[in-house]
Image 1: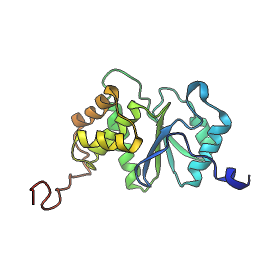
Image 2: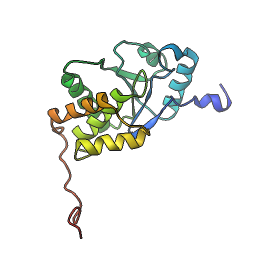
Image 3: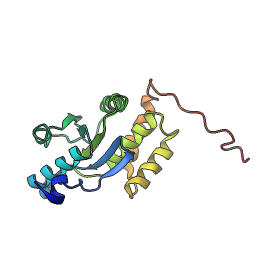
Image 4: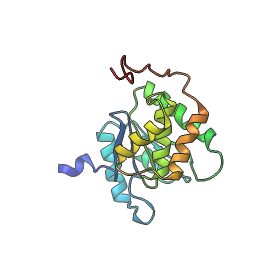
Length: 183
């Protein structure tokens, strides 16, 4: 491969959530009827060239996992479907993201499309990990990063992080001196 294609192409709706550490996008190769094998290969190449060490799939099915293995890109699968109490799956996702962050991995999280569920998962992670102090701040931050409003389904997912508490390895930072004092 030569030229610009040697570097691959970025996945659609690619967005950094934590710069150079955690990103989100739609499923490499596109979603459902728009999925293309060649595009998936190009996007996996791009992820490797960009230094990604892991892809986290939240799809209910195992689609793409074999392609990640073929592309020599580690992957993890956390089936995250609608309905029911999702706190146990979220706790597993958050603990794993935290471990990978501590190990210096560069991680991409995806589902079929970049929608409310993925947005809610990463907003909840920002809250759970102590990176942001409250649910409203994490939701607004993710909305601004992704460039679209999070719907009720995503807000419900993010709210479940509150029930999980703060990660045991993270303590919330005190606000900077003078913050909120009107000085």
